[in-house]
Amino acid sequence: MLVRLLRTYLQRYRTELVAIVFLQVISTIAMLYLPTLNAEIIDKGIARGDTDYITDRGMWMLAVSLVQVVCSIASAWFGARAALGAGRDIRRDLMTRVGTFSAREMGTFGAPSLITRTTNDVQQVQMLGVMAATILVTAPIMCVGGIVMGLRVGGTLAWVLVVAVPVLGGAMALIIARMVPQFRAMQTRIDNVNRVLREQITGIRVVRAFVREPYERTRFGVANDDLTEASLRVGRLVALMFPVVTVITNLTIVAIIWIGGYLISGGSVEIGALTALMNYVMQILMAVMMASFLAMMAPRAAVCAERITEVLDTETSVIPAAAPIGFAAPAAKVEFAGVEFRYPGAQSPVLADVSFTARPGTTTAIVGSTGSGKTTLLGLIPRLIDVTEGTVSVGDTDVRQLDLDELRRVIGLVPQKPYLFSGTIRTNLQHGKPDATDDEIWDALTIAQAADFVRAMPDGLDTPVAQGGTTVSGGQRQRLAIARAVIRRPDIYLFDDSFSALDLTTDAQLRAALAPVTAQACVIIVAQRVSTIIEADSIVVLEHGRVVGVGTHEELLASGCRTYAEIVESQLSVEVS
Image (cartoon, rainbow, N blue to C red):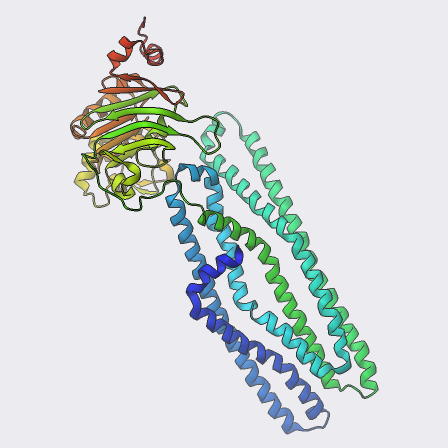
């Protein structure tokens, strides 16, 4: 997966990659040439007292060193440009892919895991790319070139390399093989820490209200300790790698000096050759060290690449129409026909055999007990999820045949949990209509009964809003979310329990203000409060995902719909026979 991911995204930077290879080859050749020049200075210059030769060879060494430094710097620059660009592209594609996910895919991965994959996982792959750009070409050339040059100048001493290099390679391979599963466990536990931390920060009020701080500290401590334990296991392997390389390196150098001393005393090896061989051994082992450092990062990056690719390869269950068609009738008509929705692997459907029609200029209410599928039903209209059987039509056209953007442009959705983005009140309402003027914004706020508290704020429309809208109350957040939907004047209004945080007076005033605005639109309301939907043109009653009653308030009571009667009785204390 790692190779596939890097190949896919680095091929966009072919020019930089060609420059990296060219520069690294020159840099490495220059580095390999330096020990030979040094040996020549010792054997032909110092040993013979030839100052001119020493000067000439010394100038060559300076020139070669300058070329090596310049090529290394340029290669690192191109490498960083390619790797960081690839990281940017991966994050962009991840965000684009996640943006297409339906509620089903979001539930499969979970927000904490998606955040980790888009940030930490991409960073690991990106870091590997930066390191690979400078090491991947240099290390093999330096290692192979060092062995060849060592064999050429070392003569009978070269057998030391034949023993040392395979031993070092085998030791590194064994350590790296044990790293891979540990890195996989480590990334999973980072996900877990993120999940626990996100829950605790988001639900801090609930934690404090129920005095659960000790429990939550313990829960976070367990997740944190698990991550620490996994990190320590990886750290021990990393800590083992460098001593192993150091020990083998030092033993190799000791062997060369010891054996070389005998050979020099016998006249079969010159001092310069011995020095050059030691330099080449150091270069070989440096190449192995560099490769080991890269190999140390590769297992974690490979695990991260698997997780990134898993997201990129996941297709949304809400598949856009290949050849979208337009609305066959006014878009303000919504029809459910034999609709079923079932989560993958679930034993029973969330919704089954749901059929009803919501027409333009009418208000349709959806009521039912908790868990009866009301929110799921509403999510089928803008295709946040797709039916598994039956059809949902808008404007007499199956929503699966409509262009997704066109479908969602005619819908104004106020979700069950109204979410505000960090910014200002103005920027939040402009999510509903990007080109909205101040007059349009104030009009929407007035309809949503939010104008008074916004005017009372010091900065009015420019009042800062924290992420999630935590700087305003629940009721204010709901009204701002309603204003965001109203400002675009859609054909279909979807209110998912959007009045629950409002007092009865504000609720009544808001619905009265909405009436003229939604006169020609189709309004679908999910509500728990009977007073909110008592005047609806049609009330659809759900029980265990099935429609058990459809009609007005009076018709449902008269027809003996037990589920609706129980809801009414519990709230309005009406005696139902």
